[in-house]
Length: 381
Image (cartoon, rainbow, N blue to C red; front, top):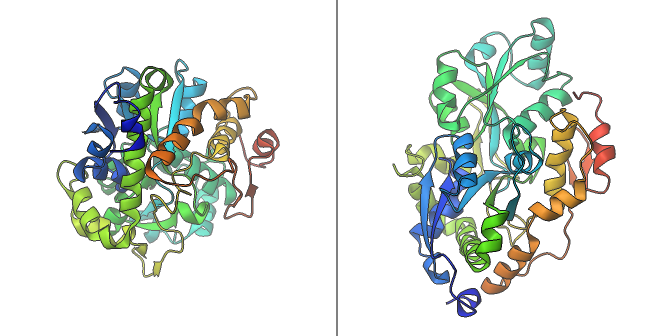
């Protein structure tokens, strides 16, 4: 029994936890399948969702107690972009890296093989359609950032649409979009099906970027503090299990099951191990593959990670005025819950709350001056 359970039973012992059918839902699936939840006095009921909008709505209505969340979506809800603002709590990161941008074979036939040739085409013939998974979500922000770094104004030179992850490949096959940004295995699946090719990974754009997060409403955390901490502790142990190399084959099988992603194991396994095939002749082992734990570097809810998404919401005009950056991030990134959960499972949490990153265009992000960072881009709303 964990220290949390020993200090008092969770206020609510059966928790419905929403997830999307993506490789990076792994800690939720593993916590339930391998019994990490029961070690902390819980029973996790994973709830598969059909879209990120459904994830948001069911969490906010209280139908799910917690959810896998897009970082950017959490900050969109917190600041009221596109709806009424609601207080959310991120208690840990669930993943880093492992997303991608896929372009269609139709673009390949028109001479597009990389970012530079895509930008040249867009400048000659504006109007390509790109899909992301949620208007304020990670995939929209990666896609906007990548296009803008190539000199493309994503709000004016291309069309953007929102598509749920499992529908991406089918809609590209039908010719509905020219490219998309999504999590795995839906980039690898496009390659396997001969529908598209991987033009960039998200870790190429931002090495070791934050991926998905464990989110709850702040009201749930306030009403059920022991449940929130126990859930975080269970998923911390599951994340550590996911990163153990000897568990990868079993993890791929768990994720491929019909109740989770419902796909072939092979569509998950290679990129889970960091082995990439872009579909047009390049194969490599990625230096920054999908990870779930990495001695706590993945799971720490860094303030700077939350701040980065706020800067991008501001950059693209989704926030119409300057937000109180640090105040918002400190409310969302629940380091108190995370540190208690770490103590319960014997994990040494980093003392730092900010981290430094260098993105693919040479931009440096360290969280020190978010307002100046948001205003520094030549291409913005």
